[in-house]
Image 1 (cartoon, helix red, strand yellow):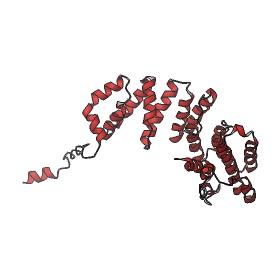
Image 2 (cartoon, rainbow, N blue to C red):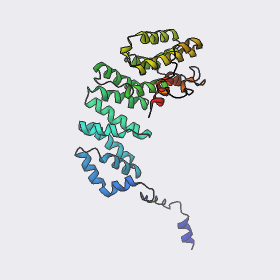
Image 3 (spheres, one colour):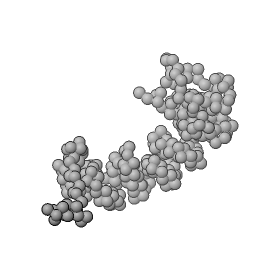
Image 4 (cartoon, rainbow, N blue to C red):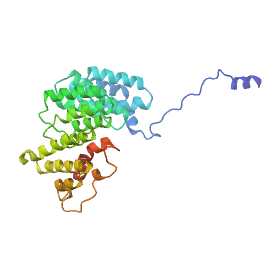
Length: 295
């Protein structure tokens, strides 16, 4: 009896085995699908250039705590995957979790480094890197994209998200540099002008907007002209010149407000001031305009 008690309370007693994980009990259908196909087959398909098994394999390795193997496989693919496979991995990796964003940054940076010269991929890379706080590298890739020139520029996608990341971290010099690279884009001119005001350069911002509004109307579609006028009216209101703001602001409000009662716009919220929230003040017009135009 004494021997049994000593054995029971012995400090040399091995720790209990970890519980066996059950993906069915946990509702992890992705892990179950990976197990059905088998890890060897998933790895083989990846080695053959198929990017589709990556999601299942990451679920499988992550679920069973094999993070080291997963990181090593990610580094291997970033360094050796052919262009089509690496592009798919970079584009599909981005998600809402921090891990997925870091994974996307790894693949996207490898893509533009190993296969340079694509301005859209460089813009995407800048956005992904800025989202994970790698601002200096993001600026390097964005400058390269501008130098090459995107034949199909679309400001409201990657450039917009990159610059928002910069302003949210008060990197105003970098943000101004990138915004000025789009002199004919109203979606860039609005945050540029409001950022200048936030930085104490209201007169410069006002002249910029008035100059663009005076330009040949053919240069800007009607909606873009309205964005500039709305931005100028908000700038004047924030400068304490409500009467001048009322003159410049379209009588019907925004383009999307026609035919309905004008609502209290997001950018007119008294909490949205340069002193209280600089980042929100910079993007207030464009953000609310985009929400109002969304279907």
